[in-house]
Amino acid sequence: MGQEIRDLYELDGVDVDSFCIEEKRLVARGRLKNERFTCHKCGSNDVIFNGNCNREFRLPSTGSKNAVLIILVHRNRCKNCDSAWWPQMPFADGKQRMSKSFVNYVLDLLEFATIKDVANYLEITWDTVKNLHKNDLKKKYKNIDLKDVTYITIDEISISKGHKYMTVIADLKTGRILHSVEGRKKKDIRSFLKILKKKP
Image (cartoon, rainbow, N blue to C red; front, side, top):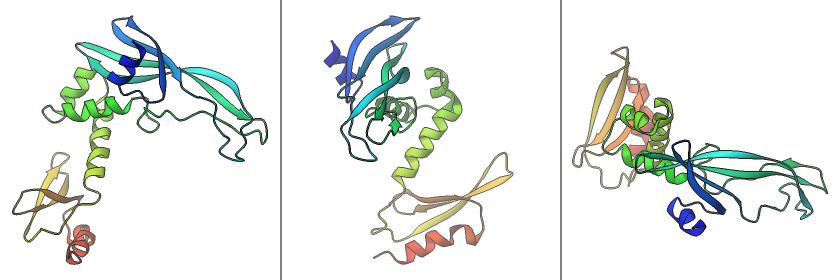
């Protein structure tokens, strides 16, 4: 069962000890594999546990039930240089209390639902969904291939009930958004136009 749950939720580096329904939600309980690490400061292998805590991470929902991982995490201390640290979670999305699989689940739902709908369905805040969406867009549009771009369109849209504006630049041929920035003045898009000018 532990291996199946680990594969289902993509819980890399975790030993799953139990999986059951608690308080109307699915709860997996586990611990990190090979939790003793080499000291990141001095390189010593003389590392001991120095306290522990349970941390909860959101997992993709299963059916109509929310799911979480509750994992026992030990604080590590190096006996050589006395530095202490909490281990990184290999399955988690950065420092957020959610698994990478949950983040992907949220982004998949946003393909056909609004931010508000996804937040309500998953019982998380609107800001959480918005930030995940924003981070995903930043990754996607960080390095856009401009090689085949010949003609562009530049449009402005109002945001915040017309009090602010955004400028959107798109590939005229494909409709793909190439760049967007808050503001509608020439200086706001100058940096992107310089990049576009240098394209092969």
